Length: 79
Image 1 (cartoon, rainbow, N blue to C red):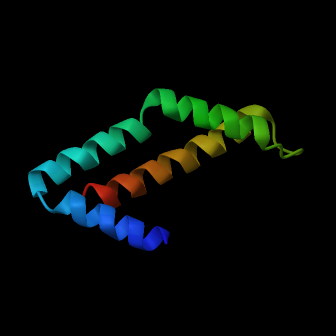
Image 2 (image 1 turned 180 degrees about the vertical axis):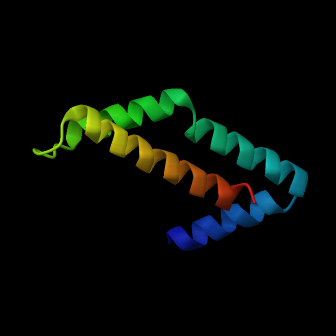
């Protein structure tokens, strides 16, 4: 299951606290950078159409959601 895979991965990362921290930082840097953010927001914006909201407003909403996800992910993984 995904939960056991995650637990196994988490235990591997945590075996060496210094190495684990580095692995976590690499994962966070890979997932959350300006290039990835731009690609994901553009793709979401292309696939989500809310008729009463213009594209620019949709982009602002999606950016806020992405930044929130990033902040929470980093709080959890980098703790």
